[in-house]
Image (cartoon, rainbow, N blue to C red):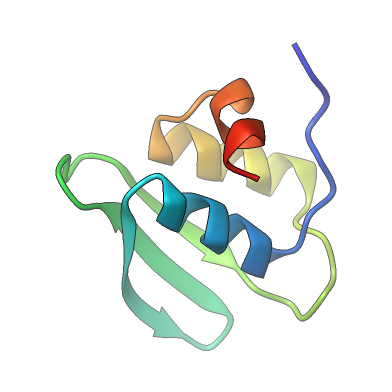
Length: 76
């Protein structure tokens, strides 16, 4: 298993959009997303400028999106 990459919230959103996720709503620095076909795949991405997303937060995003780390790295 690979280590979690240090990437910004904006890059996480771009990668999830490649996996057919759509932005539902953005409130402040939180962006709620869901998969276009599977409504059970939901996640909230935090955007804090160019600061990287913390490892625990990124793990929670991937868990909610039901994406493995290897699949996510391929989307980057």
